[in-house]
Every structure is written in C-alpha cells, then in structure tokens.
Image (cartoon, rainbow, N blue to C red; front, top):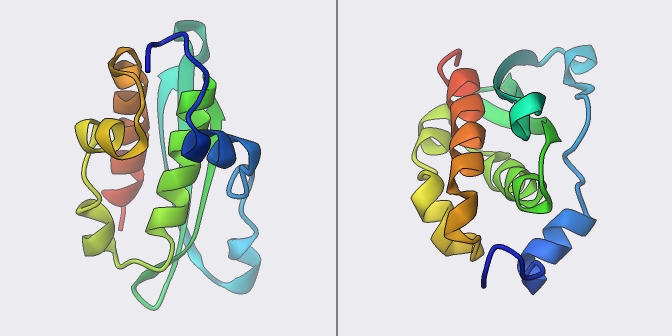
Length: 127
C-alpha cells in the first residue's frame, strides 16, 4: 500500500466507526481521569487521549485527534485495544513500528504514529 492508496478494509472500518472519539463521561461515574496530548495542528497531527481508570483498569479510553484517516483509525484501534487493560498491560501494547505492521499503515505515516505514541505515553505516565 502506498501513501496515496485508499485505506485497507480494517483501517476503513476503524475510520468509519470512530466510537471512542470525543470527550469522556467517566468523571461523572467517579472514575479517575488522566490525559496526554502531543503534536500540533499546524504540523498536521495533534492527538489527545483521556483515560478513565477504576479498580486498576482502563474503563474508558477516549481520544480527540486532528490528522489524516490513518491517524484517526490508529487512535480508534488503540482505544479499543486498551479498554479493560491494566496500566501495565496498556504500556505493553507496543509502539509505532508494531502498529504499522499490525494495521498495514504506510511507512510514510510513521511520524504521525509517533505523535500518537507520545500522547498515549503522556497519559499512561500519570497512572
């Protein structure tokens, strides 16, 4: 897949169903919330994750992102993958090179995935 090709079927499905995009409602239910942000819109990518934690597990993972469809789909995949995990398990999710392979994202988008990783790590360090 080149940088200019359309999204593969898994990425397209993720992009079309951004169920974890937006603000969390967890604070009202007494969850502890932490967040992490990275990137700049002026540079093409900005990501913010909000993690709602209770009983040592990520109960809710929400994100706000500005970026290409690959960026948004990767954020959605991460949010889905992280919910229900412990903080330790969440830290073991891998990194951008793993995500490129797992999601068949073009190598040219690796820089955007690094922004996603930075935002996620900034949130996870607060757990």
